[in-house]
Length: 250
Ligand code: PGA
Image (tube, rainbow, N blue to C red; front, side, top):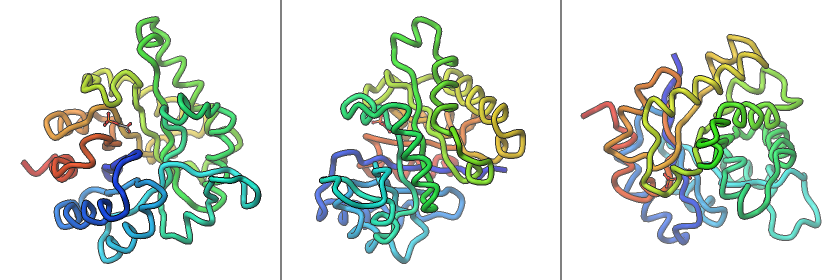
């Protein structure tokens, strides 16, 4: 049985003082053994949020990372910096990074390999545009994204990775995929992992859905057989996040 995971993606929200306040408010409501909870926070919030959450089971994630060890890369953060700051997970290849910062599949693969080399756990994002969905090429496109992201990564390192299926048309739009649409793609993603790495790895890797997840739709989406939880943007900044984490306690 795969343990469910609910990860918040705070994006470019919350100053350090606001971040500490939010972490403090959410902590008692989301610190549970039943679900793995992760707050993926802006880089400048990592240290104070790690400090605020240190006596809890909640893990902190970064929203991005560079693929070089160190050196003349003004503005970037290395895996070693993230590890030393107390980060456990790192989001890689979010569609906003692909779109606004021109991250290619090749860059994303380099980031995946570097994160894994440093024992950071990647939350790899994939997802199709509305145009691709309408053309009927969703599954084919996502299989390509997966194959490319995991290139050169050996099976023993894949088990602890997390994949987030986030259809671009559902991110921040309030237009959520139906549970069946999300399941269909998450099942195909697990199939891709099975083709590359075999059944054992495919059964263990966690696949999340992301895109307008909220307290009202979480339990239906998370009950699908190949969906192991959610990557939550907008609703992760609100008290509602606690209801998403506790989706099965109603
Ligand atoms: P959303 O964002 O929940 O606000 O749609 C999800 C994400 O981008 O991870």
